[in-house]
Image (cartoon, rainbow, N blue to C red; front, side, top):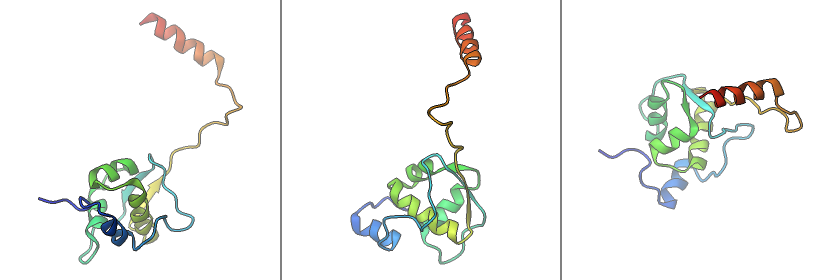
Length: 119
């Protein structure tokens, strides 16, 4: 059984994305952004879109989608942006990391160190 996306020839990838190399404007997906299907696949939908909707019945990271489809992450981001614009998926992005100038709480670090020593 062949799975969608297994042919990664450049012309195939070009066709999948309609020649686009970037997601829709104002749409970005981090590698660990979680994607969830908001609808079921419909007849006539590209097979990669349908496969994404089927696998994202539960929250799935962008990198997992790319690995399952056997496609480069850049291509998957374009496909996901298409589905997001169509309202077929929802995306949950990771929380921003604390500002680099902000040091971690020393009490918590000390508790972690004590816990590690007790192991």
